[in-house]
Image (cartoon, rainbow, N blue to C red; front, side, top):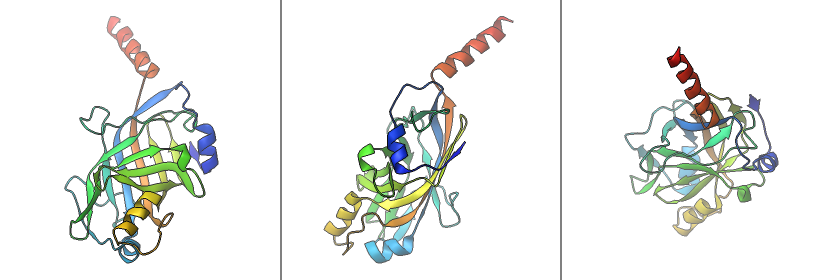
Length: 218
């Protein structure tokens, strides 16, 4: 199922209703390709490296990196994202969590252990309502996720592709710390590609368990 959807439709359909055919995200990765030239010139952020658990390159080309998605049983920042594969927009909930950090300015600025979440109050213009927050180093929402250009949903995979737009929070941080002279809110500074691996949840797992029990009795 390939979907192109507006930000308004995301809010209208994200009702948080009970899942009929639920799947839970259990792993995968999110690739990020940043416009490092723009970050350096407009925000005085020069990429200096990544932590050892970051995948390089990611799936957005040679200049991209990828961050692993944490499992649901992770000790810290467990992923909780779930959705109905037959009604993604009307059912998704929770967050997609990641491990790994990016360093700028000779390691003096760190962002990492990223959360992808959804907040309907953030929808507007090109903003979908999804956001990316850093939990390591700078603890703040860094990016609003643009309206997805790719949203491919099945019971066995979830792929989301979209632009990364500087959040008002991150823009304020950059100005307050003398890193940017202008308000960069909404600036497109890169792309993200979520490639998540789900597992059947709830009723589906009970059905699978029942089938296994029947086979054992045979």
